[in-house]
Each structure stands twice: as structure tokens, then as C-alpha cells.
Length: 425
Image 1 (cartoon, helix red, strand yellow):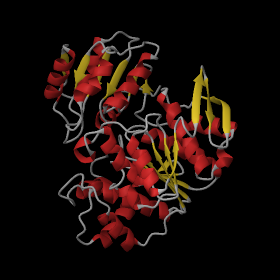
Image 2 (tube, helix red, strand yellow):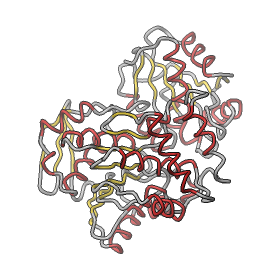
Image 3 (cartoon, one colour):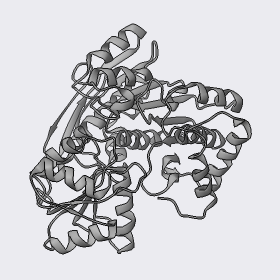
């Protein structure tokens, strides 16, 4: 959510009118503008693709790379509350003025090229990075890989976090089809890490055809966990007793292990030191991912079945072990029934809300689908304020309250909770 009336907000509203399609996959438009901008891009670029875990992986990669003393730029999407969250230099969000200046420089050269909102933002991030003399850029792929705007930039190495069903209308309706699209970030003779033990055959096939240097989880590197510690074994390095990352959830060990494998493969072996890794991963944080507030609220952007499975596993390990109420809002291209399924046994009461997006499923329709899928009632909230008030009135003092289903749901809830004086846990 962006402050209304600001110059940046006016620009963002304008960008939404530049393309007839919100999502229009293809590299030609971005490549054309990159040529016109004639940017001297950072020498080192990491592209991060995958279905889930991209934001967490970027946060941990950023934290580790900041220990080098080099200037690090990170580009992620979507944002939760402020567009500025998408573009960071040395961990600090870009200012409105810097983003607007980047937009203006692109607009001066755009002519009639119909850039999408995401394409314009990707180019703006690169302009900001060049102006800040960034040495290392971390670019999160927005959708897929092969035809995503980020893929117009030549990477030094790439990370694919995992593959599961999501964005099927654009990427394909099977894991193998989606994997082939995400494999588009690979480059000949360059490292690419696949961070999940469940690697689709398409990943191996594309890597072999391109002669990419594929490093696969549980084949080329491994990790184990025991209590408060975990261990990582790479190709040439091992870290036998590491502290768990600041980011919560067992899935974060998989994400962290992939990041370490990426750094090893890309020539950043000097960072593979126990103290360095522990310090960096203890500082890495990411809003909206297993984020606690006021000791009773838990917010997570899980919006597809795999992410919901990971959230359910993490929720089961909390002190309460379940949520007294779950506020959920989702977009119309998501599999509601498959997202609700793993969470249903861990929530006492469902509350449906309309996510803060034009593509949101109306709360009434969402509640109907949840009730049909769970054979349980689902309360319909007319607003986020009403949903939060109802959850708090329905729960006991020490009960856990969950907000999930979309970036647009969690982002809106964060604003309301902050306005109500809830402090971060």
C-alpha cells in the first residue's frame, strides 16, 4: 500500500495504464529499453527464480553479500506496504525521489513501447542500481523465468528455489511445464543451483542441453538439522555446526542451504565461514513470512498449495500449535481449496476477507468456497478492520491469530495492526 497523493503514487497509477495486459511475458520490450538506456550494469548479478522462497533466499543472500563491503542492490516483488520495498541498496529502501528519477529517465526513452508495470519497475531498479554504483545485484524473478523481465539481464549465477503449481494460466498446468519455464534463467557454462530435493526432470534436461553448471540439492550439496543447529556440506566446503537462521520455519534451512551453494559456485567461498554465516543469517529478516506481531498475530503470505504446506508445518511447531482464527484473502488465479486443505486442521475458525487487489476473490465467494472445501462455516468480513476485530473478540487472550493467503492480504493487515498499536513480536 502506497501513500496516496505522492508523486511516486501518481507514477505507479500511470504505469498501470501503459500496457493493455497486467502480465505480458516476453523479453523484447525490456531488451529494447535496456539498449536505449545503455546502462553499465553491475559486474556480478544473481537471478533468483522459483515458486516459493524467493524473497527469503534474496534476504539471506543479501545479508551474506553485505559482509563483503561491496555495494549490494536487491530487487524483489511484490511489495507489502510500500513500493520502495522492491528496490534496496545496501539493505536500505530506495527513496521516492530515486525511484521517480528512474521512472522519468525510462519514460524519456520509452516512446511507444508498452511496458507493463513489472517491466517498468525492473528497469527502474536497474537504473537506481547503476546510479548507486552497485557492485552486486540480486534480482528476483517475478513470474516464471524464461520470459520474465528480469531474465533480460545476464546473470553471473542463478538460483531456482523449488517448483510447484502456481501461475498455471501463464506457465503451464504441470510441474514439468512450469519447471521448463523457470529453467529459462540458466545460462551456458554458468552455475545454477536447484535448491529443492524434489527436482523435476525438465531442470536436468535444460541444464544438460545448455551445458549449464547445475548443482542440485541432495546431490551436489546437503544439509542436516539437529535441535538448535544445522550443518551444510557443499562441493568443497563444509559448515558442521551453524545456528538456525532468523527467518522462521524448517523450510528456511533449505533456502539457506541453496544460498550457500550459490555463493560457493559463484566464487564467494570466503563467505563460507561459520561466524560470517551465523551473523548474516541472524540479521536477515523479511516482513510477511512467519512474521509475529504483539505476541499473538502471525502473518504469512502463503498463496499456493506448497506454501500453505510449509506454513502448516511451521504453525504446528508454534507454542499454541494452531490458530484460533485464520483471516484469509486470495486472488482469483489461486487454488483456494488446495491452500485451505493443509491449514484446516490447524485453525478453529475461518474468516474470509477481500484482498486489497482488483484481482481479489470477493469475501463472500471466498467464504463459500472455503465452507464447501472444509464442510465448516467461514465468517465473511466486510473489511480488514472488521476481520481483525472479529478475530480478537472470538479468541482468548493467549490464542494465536493467523493472516494469510496473499501479499495483498498480509500487507493490508499489517497497516491495520500497526494503526491499532500492535508492535512487532
